[in-house]
Image (cartoon, rainbow, N blue to C red; front, side, top):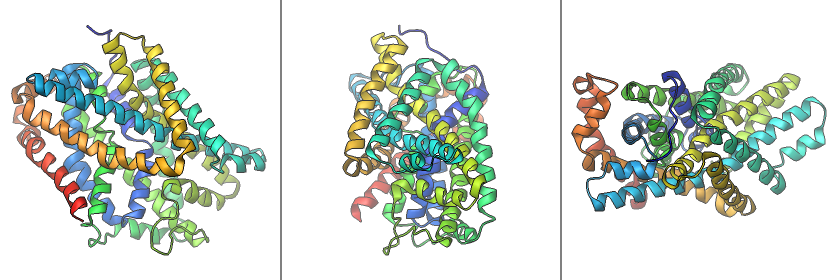
Length: 450
């Protein structure tokens, strides 16, 4: 047997930890960027359909597999297999998820490093160190490498502390603060000149853009990325949930909170873009595309904060500090995927495994930093727009076709005795078996047809 495993101490702890995994840069950096570059409200409509219609059912599949197996992604996929062929296939899916999780953490650490540097830049402005602040926000090679490494060290430190003392503890304390800061910033931004134009662009859809293959693939990838699906993070978190918990309601809570943060982030970033544009900041090029898609949050928000004078420096510091925290709640779940595998399958001490794997990921992140223009966008696209949805497709096949239906029902009954008579059970098994895999394939086929 593997080493004794940790477990979330409460329902509230799991919801905030799982939401923390889901809520991060994918929501506040990725979602508004995708929305701004893909028709605003049109992207929002398709994203909501993808999140509720495809991402939530896959989230439930991961949670159910995880709690049933009480193991890492590779072992869990092998547990639900029916024979040697499906066992090897399942283990392959698990290994691929681990690789994808590591790749995501590589580029994620670079972006999170920008959050740290902008937090320190705001602090430097407050104490009148303008030259140091300018260096921190210049996104130079040395700074990118340094702050990505700092972020990864923080991630490794938390994961090495375990479930209750690391992941759950940080999530419970810090997620409410992120929500409060976002809400206050939204209220402020909507009072500024130009904000209403951005709000209309965000909330009034142009449905002619909603059927574009590129938009549909981007929305699907964003839904999977923001919910941390396909790479085993939610499977791992599900394995730390007690048998008496109602997985259906837990899944609803996590999905709702994740989508709420994404929508709130859009309410902040898109109006802020138009406020900045109103104040002379160039956002789009002549073709109508974002000038700096990957660095949108670092060009728009600083311009917004500058309009707030001294108050803006304090707000900027608080925002980027909480963004760093939000990034940490996501990154620890990514690192937990390979760490759990090494700890359970190779009997390596958790602390040693965390630092060993973290060191390898740090080296890979440095390669991205040095070759940023070549690798960053490519790895983002490869993992979030293609890898995660396709891995989610494989999870649908396993839960819908390979894992015995009665065993799935038995697992759900442990926390929800009447689940067999619920609307969820009347819809979800058929949905995960037919609708989800077909819909994912249809979205990708539209991309290649186009």
